[in-house]
Length: 301
Image 1: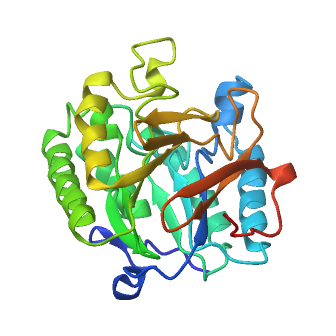
Image 2: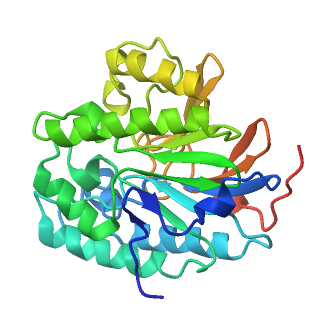
């Protein structure tokens, strides 16, 4: 199947809004993160020669596991760091990685919408306007929203909260847009909201302060501004990646879920994906290494 960018005009064409605004019973989706083609050889193995064959195998495995499910998920979302090479620093290498990634992901069952979220390696640690345009050209909008099964889903570019120094205008546009999306969620009759982003707001505790892992979460002052707004609007869960390990916690009843990588691991977890079950008033989820990924998902309580 030929690659198509389906997240355009701040929405995703894989979902019919009129139909999807209604609750039609429990459903499930697959959440993953950090295919990051090129990381293992560059960072973990410290090999000066670029290559990403191991990530190719792992990402192919992800697609094969999803396609083999007896009941198809409503969608497959990858929460950032699709590839490893930074777009502005190594554009030729980045283009090769994107080509291979798209070739693999194009084999996803066409009935399953693919939702791509941008990470720091996709738009840069200090993104520029050119970086954003390069990502948008390759993968579509860097932030957008869509309805699925009576639940409102919001995809955001978390890099704007990490460093917006070169893209203040673009970051402020997302801030304003996000405020409007939260109003939509609050006033639309949605069962609740789910947010997808790359960088976690926190790893385990809402009141975490700067630690050795500070790179892996957003600053407390940003967290304190946005998480109460999410909770008040009806967001139930925020799904993230970036940490290359599993983590999570709660801000009051708002859950933060950090999912380990499809690609290279930085802890004791194995490469895998998360199965997320959505019910009328709650969300259940479990991370499965590829070696334990089920062939059937039961939507029991």
